[in-house]
Image (cartoon, rainbow, N blue to C red):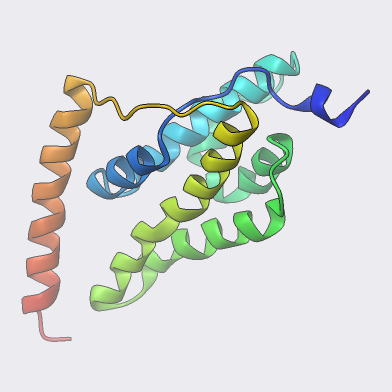
Length: 153
């Protein structure tokens, strides 16, 4: 079996900039959605019925390396390590906790590689639900930043 035969034939296609916008505005919840969609494609392509894409996405810190390896991206270990590191930064004190929002960067890197492999350039499309999530999330993020900046740490 050729290496390219293992790659999913259809995966979640999105613009990398959309990952950054949605992930930031939803305070990282979009990362879970992205993982879910990618796991769903990988498991379906390989006709694997064991393992839920939902739970693999929820526990993405544990499942990110197998996902990146399954998507056959370059250096899956370093991308997975970066994702885990950024994801755990929410535990940092004060405004440093905002560094956890950078967890979307490894996802963007993987999405760029997938889009390039499939020779697609997806347009950024936001559904009405995505716009509502962005507006609500931006308000929450703004309030969080104000709170972090005004609290004596």
